[in-house]
Length: 196
Length: 259
Image (cartoon, rainbow over all chains, first blue to last red; front, side):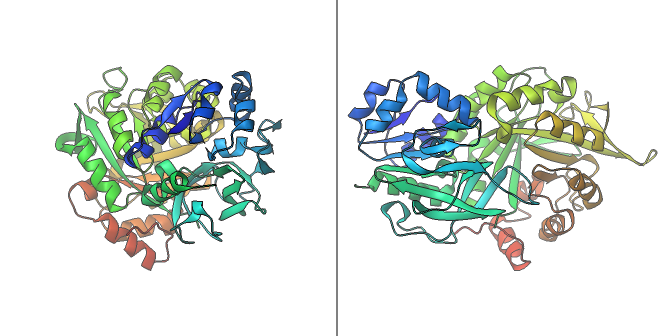
């Protein structure tokens, strides 16, 4: 059974439907105490980091996510919230994935980074199974995680940044797999198949 | 490299997809979900749905079909039609839309752009602009309520001024509908789009005039837009999306090729 953590953000339905297209029915949970009963979990997120982080903290999600030992993956802002801290609102995050989130240096390109972009430098991992370095996924973001030892795949927009990260049982995707057509479906299936 | 986006536009009226020429004389093209599926499977990068009668009838679009799209479509989509408040936008986004687009309601009350930006983030606030080239004054002028020829009217804004203003208010993307080109398939208005590109720091989407695959290549290379929106060439099977993307790739335009 897979849980979608209800952070009160708007794209929960999109994530739920994407899993339903893969034949699994996630449960959207609002009580942190429910989390431990699920085999794996998704932390979705869109919007402003500070607002989302305050919402997680005030609902008591920090401890539940901290103690969770099964696969848990953040999507977009959800991924950023799993990291150490973010420049968006200058706040500490959940600290489960090493690295800080900084504003993407887009140079002379338009911001936000919005649209389909390539994955590159994919490192072999259950989450990158059947993914090739020229596969494209759908991004919408202005902040990003710098490439480091936890990076499983990169992308580039003005600068290189982490597209997929993983550390222990925690993972994150900066793009929206739920809106990334067949490649996105493959990535979500990889998450379902991921055994620690 | 970020791909240039190919965006089929589905004008919705009474629960079906319709298409007019120069915003008039709408005829039914087909079922919303059938067409959405067809285009996404063909390799469309994004879809835009405009419920064209909503603003004219002063009501919010019918959100029931939005959830059905979100359930079956695995690419991003944007929804427009009579979104006049944060509460309206929330209803649409909760059904699973990725972005909302506002046009006439933003002209009536520009602060709406800022309110949507503050509530949902810049990334999901798209502003559609209907721009008409007025030969007499040699100026681009903003029109509103173009979903109905009887309601359509000129606004107080020149296009360039409005483009600057919506960015200041927090628009995350601008779709520029060049009205003189709409539905006539003679090519995008590259002069106007280049002028707007020069003052537009957010993603800019070209709309109106696509007739051939070369028109798409031209708008990307000469106007540097981020995406190109089209309706009739896709609805009438004049251009196949898969072939279009292969064509763009041969012209060294970054595009997402699908198997």
